[in-house]
Length: 134
Image (tube, rainbow, N blue to C red):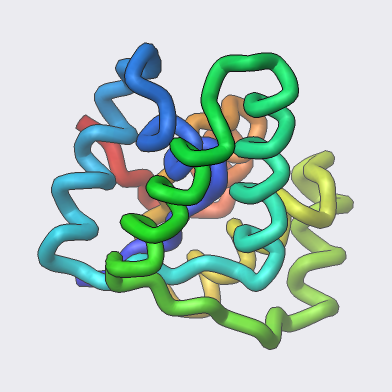
């Protein structure tokens, strides 16, 4: 079954020193299942990589290789969120609109959410959205 993938999980896959069990579970799942992401995920992932290049945590060539490998995974980009639902979730759960977009997508498609973000995990629980976890 598909699941919603957020940038925090994706970022863990890029760095050898990141060892998060939930990221590992999501990585194993994406080998056989589709991940769904809101359009902003594309920007978030690339921003994380460039920021870490500046910090000398990774190189440009590592970023390029990672993005190439990422492009080979089954990731579907959802480009049309339900605006009123995103805003409702942002307000009710005290989330950024960005985080609310992930939660709205998981609700709308009735999918589990893969995230490491503490506030988003709490909001998902309060909204009855199951998490991808180990």
